[in-house]
Length: 218
Image (tube, rainbow, N blue to C red; front, top):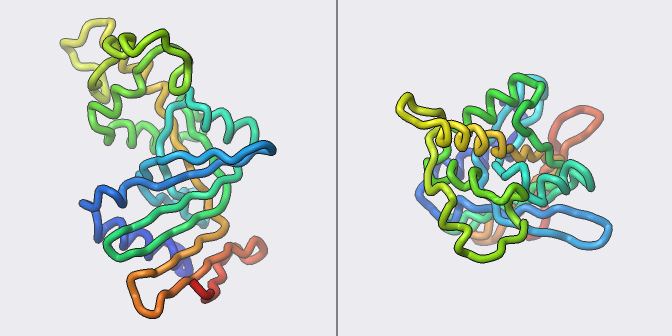
């Protein structure tokens, strides 16, 4: 870890300290376009330090067919993520850009990260990426009955006893599995469980590639 990335160290300590806080496992991520803001809940998976960068990123996962995937790829990569930890009453707000890592990623490092996280998913979560219709999340359905044909769980890799249909479904779901890689340029850390409340804002200095910190009024 770069020596001055204080915010990443604090966030990692929060993740490690409160692993069973279910409400702390979900964050809210926003995307921006000229007409409206969109906001969605995501599950942050890990803080990662790319080999080709001096700065850490926050990784979540998404369906390659989802509207947010297309938005970040084709409209604007700008994003803001808010993550609340209820027990210590702390909030992290990360502003920056979002990169999408899909199946067939040419950068072998990121493809390895994608496949590695796919294997870490629960069988149920892997099954959600095998849902049809082809349009994926947000596409039209004639009725809820269609959902009865969806897979309820999938293995990470085909087993020897799996038939060709099961093998094809696992491959299909794995190809739909993508990463949301948030590259922060500003991190706003609020500590509301202490009196007086505290707030520190970390800003990435583009010239020095170092993080500047400023104490602000909460």
